[in-house]
Length: 113
Length: 112
Image 1 (tube, helix red, strand yellow):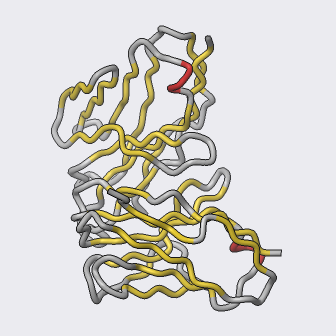
Image 2: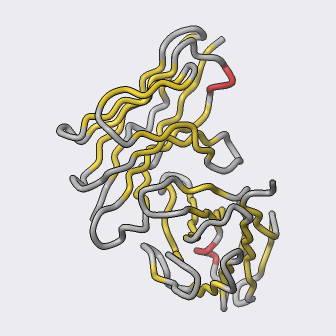
């Protein structure tokens, strides 16, 4: 059973701070990793993709990947109240089920004004 | 560009009724997926279609059937709805297993 684990939260940070969201995955053959943001009552929206070890930056968002540790993280700099949402981590599957992504259950982030 | 479109957005059914959830995409995705999302359970894959003409079971297929009508359309059918199928259903499209999936707005289904 392929798994992606995330702390459910809630993670509360003050406005302007850095929010750090973490995720571990069990499938050592996973090649691609994604972060989705889901506002309450809405659908998941892709915000970051990362395919190789290291950091990838896009605006206020930085995704970090360490395949040796099977660890993915998302940093949100200068957090805003509009960043308050649930963040889903997803990993591509290798082998059987290779057309699928495995999703974590999400971390709820609350940015306090 | 509509992306992934799901209909209906809301539906209330009685136990034992049947219905079909529709999904269409204009993003030229080869693969399409149906998920359900329940509080505390995350996204669970019901069925998927890796390419036109193929369908496969996901994690929770019981009580559902699917049809990949053509490359654009992938429908989910509940033959005899049960209260346990009350959920939010999301359709998603993707180009390949290593690429991200893009989600529709969801269908909120209540079964009484």
